[in-house]
Length: 129
Image 1 (cartoon, rainbow, N blue to C red):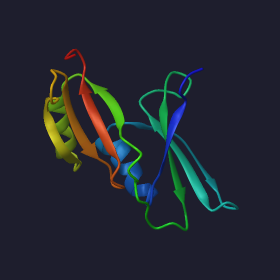
Image 2: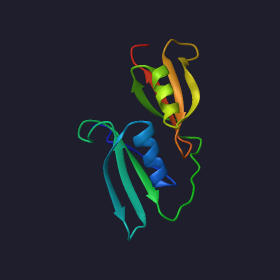
Image 3: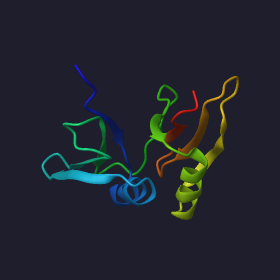
């Protein structure tokens, strides 16, 4: 078995695609509208689905907003340099909610970013654990 994707419900698909593609540098792998069900699925990621896990952004056309809830934690992305990644994300209009630095009680360098729907994305600097 392997993880295929993580699904996030998004309120505004264009805004979310802009964030994941333009701010985080993912690629749009495929997008399908389902008019009878009144929803759209857009799959984004850094690799093809056959090569690794991706994100499924689900936009239900008749839902204006979602609450992320308190059971969901975050999505984690590996980065070579968390400090540089934060600078790039800020320059592209992204929201950093925790600046890059060592995690509490450890040496791993992390940072947190928030997407347009309030989902948290953790940046983990490779080679710092």
